[in-house]
Amino acid sequence: MEKEQSFKDTEAKDKDKEEASLREEISEMGQALLHADKRNTTIYLLSIIGEIEGHECLPSTSKTTKYEHVLPRLATIEDDEKVDGVLLLLNTMGGDVESGLAIAEMVASLSKPTVSLVLGGSHSIGVPLAVSTDYSFIVPTGTMVIHPVRMSGTVIGAQQTYDYFKQMQDRIAGFISLHCHVTKERIAEMMMNTQMLTKDLGTILVGEQAVKEGLIDSVGGISDAFSKLYELIDKKRV
Image 1 (cartoon, rainbow, N blue to C red):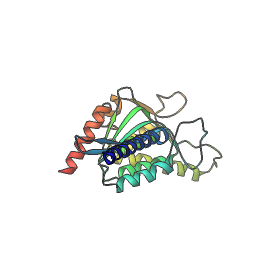
Image 2: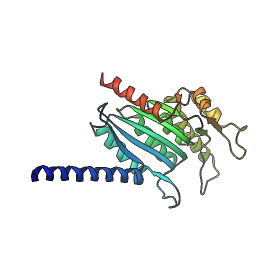
Image 3: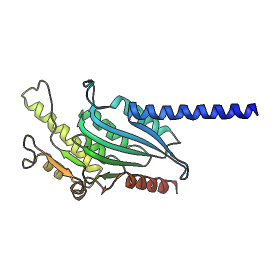
Image 4: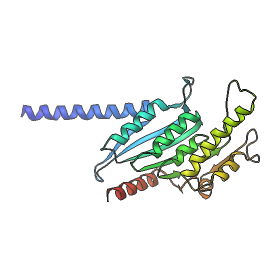
């Protein structure tokens, strides 16, 4: 009887530890491991929130996603046989180009089924992230902002600088066009649009507009994203 009680106590403690670990993952990293016992699936929930931080630390008052946290996590997901799929939640203003593209390339190269859901917005370098998954959703009020590459700090006024900007924009446009239904030329056209933003170049696409352009696959919410991910997981298992 005592052994049985001891086993139950140990089991309860393990469950408490697991729940505490889950809460910490969500609060500190915006990540969680979701188990669906009835479906016998495990989904990794990864969120890209606020500004994507690059090699320089942003102010502590800013909401950030640190790429040095996300990249190792994605590598762990790929190597973990228990994880069946990845759900990527996006509400980001963009951020560091190199870091954002690095995360997008990692997501795109995962062998696990992946689905993204744009909530609020996925702007600037958030666009490649939104399209990097196998299937993408955007909520009706979600926004996508496509604009030219910006650079802060000292800029040398020479042809090489403009060539570098062009190269970066070509990399971004090339990745986006490879992972959605918009041509590279159309992406460049939307980047250089002068008719929409009052203080900048670019294009804002809201919900259904992003789908009509071919940037995002469907308008939907969290239930749609889960349904699609389960569908992709089931197809892979067959």
